[in-house]
Amino acid sequence: MSALRQSAKALSIVLAAIAISFLSSLAVDRISFLDFYRERFSFQPGSWFAEAVSKVDSVNGCLVVGASTAREGIDAAILSERREFGSVINAATTGGNIEVLEIQAQILSRYGKHLKCVIAGVHPWLLFENDPPRVVSTGYLAHLRLNDVLELTDHSTLMLEKWDAIRLSLIPLGKHAQRLNKLVRFWIYSLQTKWREKPLALKSFEFFPGELNAPGNSLYPAGTDLLADRPELIKSRLENEYPSYVFDKGPAETSFRRALEVFKSHASQVFIVIMPDTPLIETFNKKGIPAFNRVVFQASVKIIDCSKLSLANSFFLDETHLKPSGRQILSSAISRTLGREAGSLPVEGDCEVRN
Image 1 (cartoon, one colour):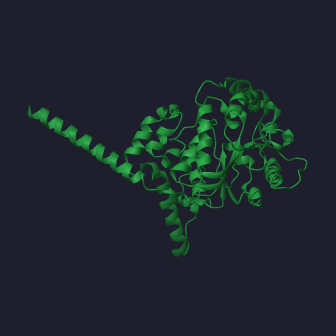
Image 2 (cartoon, helix red, strand yellow):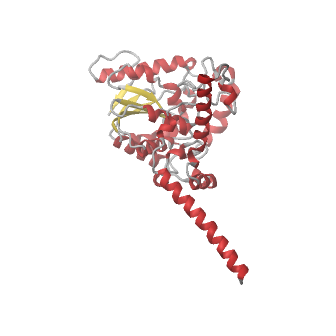
Image 3 (cartoon, rainbow, N blue to C red):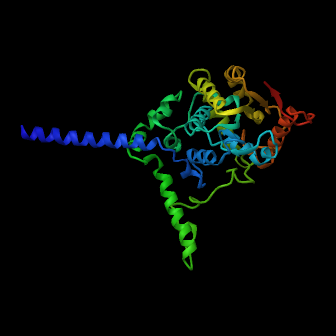
């Protein structure tokens, strides 16, 4: 009997320890750790977005949101030249599908930011239901409280990472451990550069090359041309990946709608930029248009339609991502289009505006 009591006592101690750890973690998670993300390190979606949110001007700032096509295709510096936008920061990250917008909107809401505007660069084909973005391995979880996660439309990928999510959520500061690790190493590097006669190079403090280096706003290097250099890769994606996309049978449309509503509650204006694509994925864009239109035409946001912008394939590095040359053309067209709305005359190459 005493052995049974000892076992019960041990179990109660373990359960109590878990409960205390969980409650401590919840208490700590209510504190904003956004300042941990002011320093930019190597790209990780959650950290990248938080780095941008930490720097955006809450009074006169605009945030570009979306997936990698918006990250590569919209130049914040060009848009910042237009006073209608104020100070613009590109916070777009990467896919999977359109649901990445809702995660970004939830993080913006979690940190209580209210911006001058949000500029969402999207494509109709992003409303496919396959491959919604994950929140744990991407680093988004670090910026979402439990109630934030529960408010998201789609929990399917969270279930794939549930044990990692539980482990990180049980440990106080567990979700920020990776960032704290980088910060400590970066702080040691910075201190020793001031005090050592022959300081060690930054790479001496990295686990992998470039880990503590701040990347540029565009991650794909200039000169990359998959259309010309890897046509077999593009052909494989067009024949195998895109045809597998399923539309109108899951939460993507609902997620997109909620994302816009959250953005509208945290920005004075929300702009939807319909991004240009090569003709290679025209078929897949058409599949997404019905759901896309159902959302954007009911959302009461300004639509800047750049899908018909005359851009040859030479301005794209693959079927959908723009090269730096295409990035400049698109961003200038968006800027001019907003200027036209303010009273300037339209010029050839402007995008179409729909309310």
